[in-house]
Length: 196
Image (cartoon, rainbow, N blue to C red; front, top):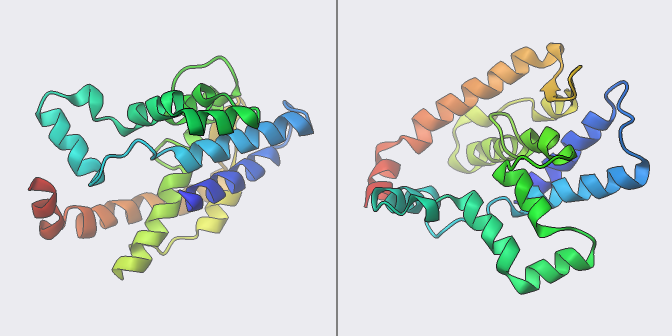
């Protein structure tokens, strides 16, 4: 999650360089930047032990509403008094942070930039693809992540996107994720461990 926090900050810095991006003052931008970095840092705080395997077990037991780690993470931020007080002490509403990773439709800049933390091409996936490749020894995470991060911007509607120049790099990233799933996540040993 520290890596995701770092990558989210770099993506936001790239977005700020979008021509015509003058929506927030410097002070407001710094607050938003920190809020997104906090959402990236805390986005997996609701994970149970054994991560997604446990979520699937809860769904099979018809306890699905308790299995979604983003929803659980929102509850942690809402009800953990110590964490809540630290966030509030520094001027951050816990629910505005969880709204980013839960993809709640708030009427502020969070809804527009939430794809940075939770989408098909987000800070989490950019972080874990390279890390997983390194620690498993498979070559599929060997992407040009720094270039891809530098190509995030806002489109004419104010939505998060990448530049046209980065399409092939994004394709490489998506193919790398597909190969990673085939070689690691869907590996028979991993599947057997998840099943038990």
